[in-house]
Every structure is written in structure tokens, then in C-alpha cells.
Amino acid sequence: MLIKICGLTRQADVDEAARLGARFCGFIFHPKSPRCLAPEQAARLESGSMQRVGVFVEQSADEILRVMREARLDLAQLHGGQSVACARAVGAERVIRVIWPDRYMHRAQLHSELQKHAEACAWYLLDAGLAGGGSGKRLEWQDLYGLKAPHPWLLAGGLNTDNVRRALAQCAPDGVDFNSGIEDAPGRKNSQKMAAAVTAAAQPKATGK
Image 1 (cartoon, one colour):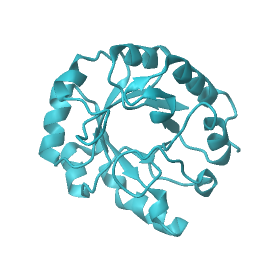
Image 2 (spheres, one colour):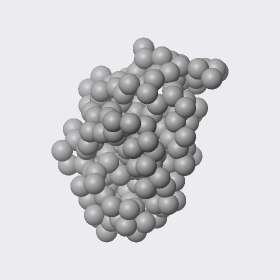
Image 3 (cartoon, helix red, strand yellow):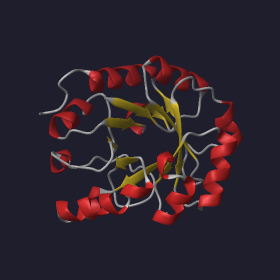
């Protein structure tokens, strides 16, 4: 199970994410987010072997690429209406494309959206809500059971220690993304909640297969 810890703002929390074996650490560059960092702030946060992900909502390809250079990012997570052309300009191998299943009435429509972006991303992140940044709400996990995505996908949306096992029993993502559910306040992670959530997600036979 791949683990992503997002909304990081403090070195102690980045260190804890690394200690827990997270694959991805996420930094938010959306000005309206209470977890927003300037590129130079993110650049100062040392992350070891974790892949560094930047969360972008309104920025153009040129702006995304500039921030990626300045913040030493490996991947760009596109939360906005960025086009397929924008994602290609960033580099398909460096893009996590955010998809909102709640937008689609039928599974076929969701599959069509996944296919639309398949050539311009390496990962998907399926989030709750209908648009923009993370809502902290949760998806109807059972609706995603058996999802056949062209690339590996991460499950997001209000995941925490209490519900991640239930989420993984109802659908089978390749990874999970924790943010607000393991915080004391926006951008201030709780180390005990982090450890408990990661432990719960990493337990064997987490999916219902």
C-alpha cells in the first residue's frame, strides 16, 4: 500500500512521514489553502527518499514548472481544470491527475474520464467533492470497487485512523492520501494519528478481494 502524506508544512512532520515509510510527501501551492507554502519554504523541507509532490489548482504549466524547479518537486498533482495539453507540458511521467468520481452518474463516465487523461499522467488521485482542492469529505468507497484504471491510483477524501481500514475493505486503491484526518490544525500533523493511520493502511489483506 503506497502512502502519501499531504499538506506538510513542518520539518518534524516531514521527518515523521519518512520514518513511517511514506512513498510521497505533498506540499500545497494553492493560495486559498491554509496549508499553502511558498516554493522556497517547501525547498527548505528535507524529505529523504520520499517523492516530493506539489499540489496545484489554478496555475498554468509555466507556473507549475517554475514552482517545481524552485521547490525541488518530483511530481505535480493537478487539482484544477488544467488541460491535457497543460499536463503534457509538465511531463506525463510527472503528473498525478485528480479525478472526482462524484461528478459522474455512471461508472462508464468515470472510466471515460480516466482514459481521457491516461496519456498525460502517471498516477490518478480520486478525491471527494466536485472540484478544486481537497474537501476533507469522503467518497462512497463501495462505488469504486473493481475500478479498472489505466494507471495506479490513490484514494483521498477525509481518510483517518478510524476509517481507512473500512475504505480499503470497500475498494482497492494502490495507495492512500492522508491530510486533514491526521492533523491537529491545518498544516500541523499529529504524529500519533499519522503513525496509527499508516499502520492501519499497511495491514495485510486490507482490501476485500
